[in-house]
Image (cartoon, rainbow, N blue to C red):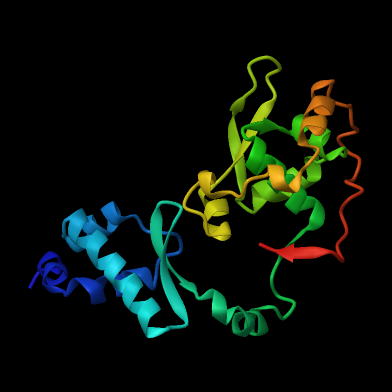
Length: 210
């Protein structure tokens, strides 16, 4: 039996489970359908049924649609067990400064480094390099007026945040009652910064996992 015939002979749900166990990023329904030689409709139906079955059985993992694809995740109710296992000084974490910078990019993208610095009030060059290295932000062209490089969040950001798309980001207004005033201030001009100066907000003792 050829490899293609062997794949086609597999039961769909077990085959999907086997593939999703080894993916390192969310797999799209179209890609899974192509690999398993099934129709996208068959794959979509099977994935949703599997997700419902795991939830009904109260399993410690769940199958979620995130960033345009499907992947296994540990269930939120089991977070304490996962934390106890992985948070043993081995996980790289983002500083408070990096989280703030990432939030500015997420809500104002595409945005330049100077604009992010203006919103935060401090130089963010070093932090932006960290976010680029972590694959959470990426270049998104240049600003027509100034030629400055623009940045946006990545699919990896959506995956880590558990979001299907940017439209699922929480509303910002309830958390920033003076958002209009902040916007007015940033429109007055972008302050100049020493690109080699460290970000004074960086505090290695105050870190957050992402």
